[in-house]
Image (tube, rainbow, N blue to C red; front, side):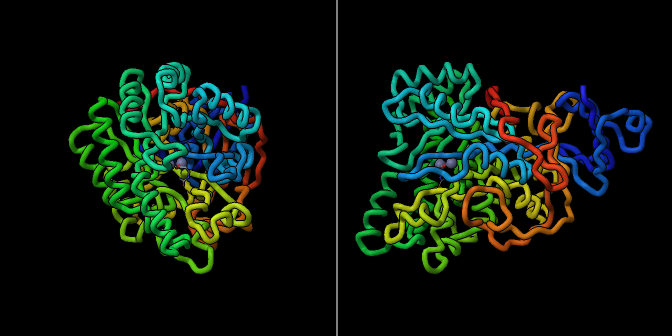
Length: 465
Ligand code: URP
Ligand code: ZN
Ligand code: ZN
């Protein structure tokens, strides 16, 4: 069994910061010992990694990605191969992507399709959530089978009528089923029926630029849908995870539910923490690069999101990585913002942007690791295999240089998309080396991984319940 020792670094987990050496044996963490002690110095090893001056972190867990997702007549530009390679570059060693049920088809068929896309192609480990587009007797029964085999979370949409949208009755039925089988319902909370009216009116009045995407997808319609989702989950006796929360009033709804003791959880994404409607209003058609749903909000919302992350009103930061190239894809919406494919690239920069938040004083180091690694692993039944550095855990380890300066750019990123939403942004901190189950995938800032290293992760149920 091969043995690796990482020595001299500061091990940061969600609960501790310790100057410890880490022994890895056969893909798992075998032991931690205080640096410089006899225990640590006595370890023999095939490979020694000097982490002096570095952080030693659990690999990031990005619980919301869309590789190769069909949307608006095109496909998200990253494949499982390019997307997981980019994830590794950014210190993310686990993704949970969304398999999609096509209307009129079974969950099984959707899941098989996503397995076929990912199998043998991933650079890091991956699991699946299931998007429920067609709630009926048969798909409800299938939910039980999927939970039993490790697909334990189901996304429903209150938005996108005619595509993924479910009405309140269907949502209630899916939640009732989840309350019985241990599944976690993930909600895209926006009132899509009302939004479609506003879209039609905006286009009829000649308001066609990308900025109007943000205008019509109103804060009130995110907050209203969040409130409704909470009440439906409450009636069903089911837990609820609200995805890509962007609006202050939606945070308030989640906070109020949690205050009542309801099992309601919230996720936000770097784009809502670092970008704003100012980006959507960039001149020319540049704003299309920032079209995603829920939409970017005015800057004032950011402080509420940071506060929510600090005080645990929000538990997870995922990327909602859903990249479309500007050229040929985002351009499909020139003259009609409703035709711009929704989604932004981000899987590569989540760990760095959140480290910048540590540097800027928004988060502590441990909270950084908690919201980016430990909490998503716990939320989606992967802890302590993923999300921490402890004996028995998978040796998914990031050696992170907290003092390195970098400039984010499409010129240097590894995602298969022709722009960066953070072009030119300077951040402090950078991944140096990444191990996935003890195997180097990034070594001193060179990619040494390969497609097919990543394995499928059947998951347990939510560990916060
Ligand atoms: O704009 C987004 N978020 N695109 C991906 C699909 C979704 O709703 O998460
Ligand atoms: Zn969504
Ligand atoms: Zn998404």
